[in-house]
Image (cartoon, rainbow, N blue to C red):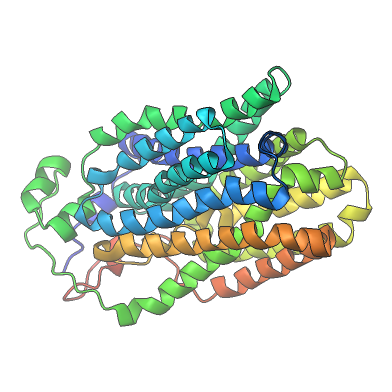
Length: 435
């Protein structure tokens, strides 16, 4: 059987691809904005709500991550009934949740609205990369997913850092943190309309809707024979487990820095938290995303992720053993090395696996499972890292995170390589596909 979407796979990069990538990336931007904003205004919220480190961490981060978890489950399942149908509801949930943070008066209210915000972000974590991948051409798919994923996350983090820098010293603390958190609603509102304008993805139309007429009308692709998809879970469960495990490992290691870097780590090396975040993002994280975007389609997802995990682990351990006892410049350099390796590797491509390695029929579910594994990693960090920090200290915590990163490199080596392959190669159709 010929690859029915080969014509679409082999199209050159177009304005359609750029638009869909930027619209998909807007949701990731909101996640980067809100999680980073929470860590930057952490001390102000502690003071305002009268909570300690553990209590504020649970209100700010655990509530939003639990929302992510549930949002991924619900919308991963619903994706089977249409990508476009739900591609906008997620942005609406993010808008409402983010904006409502400006009006809360108790810790419980903040936890509730952060949960709602997290519900939308969890849905978007499943839908945006899935939709972007199904729109993408074969040879640029990794680049497009990297831009809408890791790069936009860190651009969102940069946006929240600049917003915090602009208001924290010019407004009363009680007002400043509310404005910083609520501003995350703006990018989500912008894309609601844009997402409703894009057509259903060609792979959904062909493999799930089985509508050759709609495919020809919307994409100009003529298919003589509708493929019959058969999903055999016995062939994919191990791959799914490994894909989920790499995201779980990455989020444990990475989100400790996201949540506690601007306050706990920055304070330990004598650097202002907001300046610390600006340096990490501009000098290391965002350049790492750009490098990954322009190399993972050439070097392979496995290579950049394994190298990234390894560099991330070694640099984190060196920071613990030498950086904390040295000058602020040495400490920042080691942390920066950890961050750039992180974003060259898993920080950019860890979300690819649940989408690229599985059939269209179950892609929403497999994407959701890997997302939930990542969120479980963040929950692990949220619950355990403050306790480990308080009981064992920063040096032990960072060594532990470095070792966990090295484990991620090992697990990565067992994954399949989707670089330069059509998504149709993973459809498990009746009969061989000629690509």
